[in-house]
Each structure stands twice: as structure tokens, then as C-alpha cells.
Amino acid sequence: MRQVIVLLLMSVSCLLMTGQESIDETGLWNQYFINTNITKRLKLAADFQYRSYEISGDFQQFIGRASIGYQPRGTQIKLYAGYGYFNSGTRGNSESNSHEHRLHQDVWWDSVVSDFFEIKHRIRIEERFVENQDFRTRFRYMLFVNVPFNNKQIVDDTYYLALWNETFINGQTSTGLGSVQYFDRNWTFAGIGYKFNDDFKFQAGYMHELSPSIKKGQLVLSVFQNI
Image: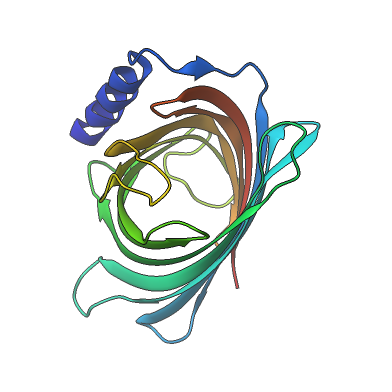
């Protein structure tokens, strides 16, 4: 429960920030996540995402990312390291794109509060190589909370409430082209998920994005598959 309260406090504090441009158009983010086990402790993960500034179109970003993970013996912690490619567009009529190569390292772990809640954490460190900008780093913390509706636990054929919040902190403020703040952005999501079985689940919901310059909403559709 303590993690749920932290999630709510983080969301409210970010929503109270002022001075950002409020963008009326709702974006659409399509996400496909794949996980597989190589051995009992060695894992592979990948995701592909296509984002648009509006539901009807206006390309925002394509992401292709892959990582290899390891679960130390006797723990529930999972460690990942990987690479991602990002192709980003510009909102509006401009067709200019920028490219980014990004390394990342993750630490995942669960919190056992009760059998009713699924609570997961992720800390991510990123090394960013953005086209025509200086190298810089970023730190991210993400909290996931899933609550089942029609079963006591999230088992096969379960609908669930999906909540998550992620905060991004820049390691440097100079980009080589200008400056940014240490606080980069915050994402707050609420939606509905359905777990078909251990290999497949789906989520759909609304995510509020807040940065020092904008406030914007996104419709987020996510598919999770274990192969």
C-alpha cells in the first residue's frame, strides 16, 4: 500500500506544476513487448513502439529496443542491459526527423504487499547518443500496480486495473544545442488489462505526460507476449 500512496503523490505533485503548454490533441502509442527465457536465469527482452502526436496520425516516434537479462540465484531481482534505436518526428507539418542510439541498464523487482496486488518496480539508467547533440545520461524510476477485477489474483482470463507512473531525471542539463532542466518528464497511466494466459496479455488506457514545456494526453495500447 505504501507504494500505491507514493504513486499517487508523485502523480498529484506533477499535475500541480504550472507553466507548460497544454496540447489538446491526444496522441496514440502502440507498444509490443516480447520476453523469452534462454535458460532459467538468462533472459531476452525486446519492444517495438510506434507513436503519433494525434490518434489520426502525425508521426512522433518509432522505437526498436532489445536487451539481455539475468536473474541472480536466490533473488527475485532481474538485471537487464540493452540497446535502443529511436527515430523521432516533429509535431505539425514539419517532416524533419532526428535519430538517437541509446544504451540502457535496468533493475526490476517485485514488492509483496498482498496476493491481491501486483506491484513491480523498475530503475533504468540510459546513455543517450542523440543526433547532433552532446552525449548525456538519464535516470528513470517506474512503479507498476495491477489490481484484478474478476479473480482474487491475476491468473488466466483475468481483467485488471493497470496503473503506472514513471519519472525521468536528466544527468546533465547541457545538450550541446541548448539546455534542459534536470526534471525531464513524468508519465502517469491508468487503464484496463486482460491476461489471456501466461504467454499473452493486453492493456489499453490513457497516459498523461508532463514535462517542463508541455502537458499532453496519450492513448496507449500495449501487447505483452512471452515466447
